[in-house]
Amino acid sequence: VEYSDISLPLLRRIMTGLANRSSPLENLSMSHCEFEDHCVEGIFSFFKDKPEILPRKLTLVSHGIGHDDDRCSIMTRLLMCQACSLEDLTISELAPSDDEMVDIATALERNTTLKRLMIDLTNLKMRAYDRIRLLLCDTKNIIATYNSNHTLGVLGYEMRDSKISSYLKLNKKYSDKRLVAAAKIINVHFAHNFHLGNFDMMKSQVLALLVSYTNLGFRAWEEAVDEESKENGDEDEGDEDEGDEDEGD
Image (cartoon, rainbow, N blue to C red; front, side):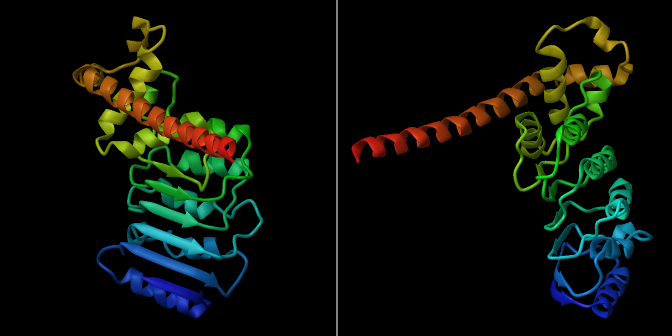
């Protein structure tokens, strides 16, 4: 369902209609809101008491964001809610600060539904990127890596951090999240100086699960690395071709 040039009365009618549904919409797109500076938080506020009616895909284009410290607070609370089934979220005007991105990443720690988050990352600095890496692959110990976010596969319009990009691609590539977890565990804890002390914090059932798909994890990580190498190789070949054309000219 798509709406444009939204007034406050129209937004209320839209939300009332959503609240009366027995299941969430697959796709809701709203563009060019005509009211107030804090439109995005206003939209999310309609969902805060009934997160289960959030659509699976929500697109907000040309909406007022606001400039205060609470402009992402309702959104982050919804992302933490287990009843939220949101899988794809686009907020074209949202360029979060480091603090806001840290809050968003914290909200996504236990989120197992959001696969795609399209926001503007140009304002982010090292602290925010460090927090995103921790979200996608916590390297503290095997349990922490196992409990990282293995669902988010796309973040932002342009990802400048290669490590985050590799984790996102791995999350996106495999629907079996146990496989993603295994690949990350093997890459982080087995690929370098492995020590049996890494198992100290593990519960026996988790250890058994890890051992049961170790080979799959190795294969998954190798496939992801091979795929990224091929992509980089194609780009390099493209650059060489352009160079040959220049020489010909």
